[in-house]
Amino acid sequence: MGTAPQPAPAPAPAPVPAHTPVPAQPPAPPGGPAAGTRAEIVRRLRTAATTEPGRLQIIGAVLAALLVVFGAVTALEVSDREAAADDVVGRSQPLSRDAASVYRSLADANTAASTGFLSGAEEPREVKERYEKDIARASRLLVTAATHTDADSESGRQIAHLNEHLPRYTGYIETARANNRLGHPLGGAYLRFASDLMTEDLLPAARKLHLAESSRLRADYDDARFWPLASVATGVAALAFLGWAQRRNYRRTHRVFNRGLLAATVAAGLVTVWLVGAQALAGARLDDAEMHAQRSLDVLSEARIQALQARASENLTLVARGAVLTDDGRSDKYAVEYAQAMERLGTSLDSALRHADDTAGREPVEKAAGTVSTWRTRHAGVTRADQGGDYDGAVERVIGAEGSTNESFDALDTALAEALEHEQQEFTASAKAAGSAFTGLAAGAALLAVLGAVAAVLGINRRLSEYR
Image (cartoon, rainbow, N blue to C red; front, side, top):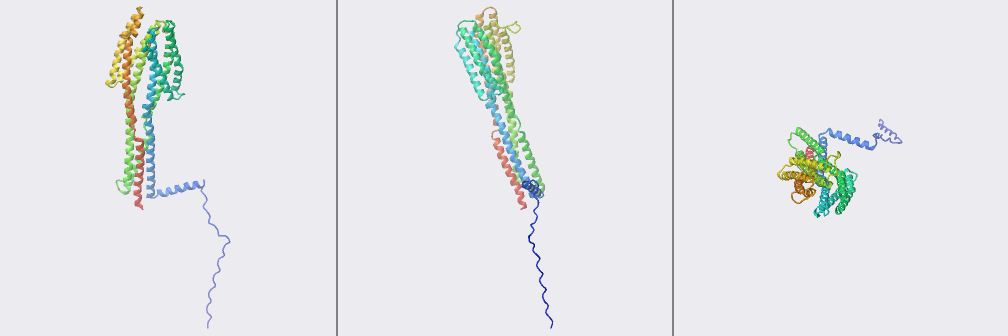
């Protein structure tokens, strides 16, 4: 009987190492955890870009971002243009007008003072009140201008100069009046001192103030008319990218329209057309305000000032009675200045007629031109009477109630004031129309851009759903 086979002994278990080795960690990327995060983002984007759903997600994000940027840039630039247009109407043009009024008020005060002096010891009440109103108006306008002007600017410096030296002028006038009432010849000398201070110091400062404010007005014009290039460029870029995305969609799916992308294109197109149209309309209105109204206002203001200068020189010719000569010593200084001012006045009125673009603006200028002709004729009679030794007759021809040069001057000033009022209304209407062209555009652009971005994302998501 054989022996049964014995089972083979089980193999001995493998020895267990004292410490289980830990798998080695990959080395940290250079630059720390942030660099690793960026690298991971880049890796994922590269991975996404290799698949159609990933590409669609990238296209949707770019479209949404581009449309939002378009809306934001448009809203900002349009707000700036609208503010500049409002400044033209509400700030810079009124300040420029007030600066011209300061000049005119000072010149008119000087004319009224010389007219009152010619009237003798008893100055007419209406002439004195006119002088006082002119000084008060100039002082008030200077205070108003100072509240809207930086003290270190050119306008601020001229305002400070006028406020400092205007009391000197009024002091000379009061001294001249006191001496005139007493019958002292010294009154005429003080009147000439005052007139020289006005013409050689105060009026040049007022002129500089007007030029500075006119420069500010032109700057606001330029700001309002400057095209919003960043908005237009962003809008064109958004439309181009939307066009490319829809063409790509058509080539891959053979579907003509994607409703979301089409809605985004319509929204971006509306904003672009609205922006271009509003800017073009505002620019045209501002050009109209400047070409047909502001230039007329400038020329008419110059004419009014030149009429005042001529009137003051005419009065001073009789006050000085030949005591003040030109530098060459050959001619009466004030007679020469009168002739020069009247020559400039005629030139300004011719220019004002060329700028007048309607009957309501042309009629008062034509009336003013006819009045100047009458003034010249009457002044010739003043000169003949004065040179013939009839001083009292010459004075009566200058300040008399009827048939005098004063009557001509008043009629001229009234006609110019009427023309200025008409052109001011024309300017205000055109400038306000320019500002209204931007009404609602900033908010509308932002809203349409956001809606366009949402529509673009929905359109892309519609395509993504086909891959799920």
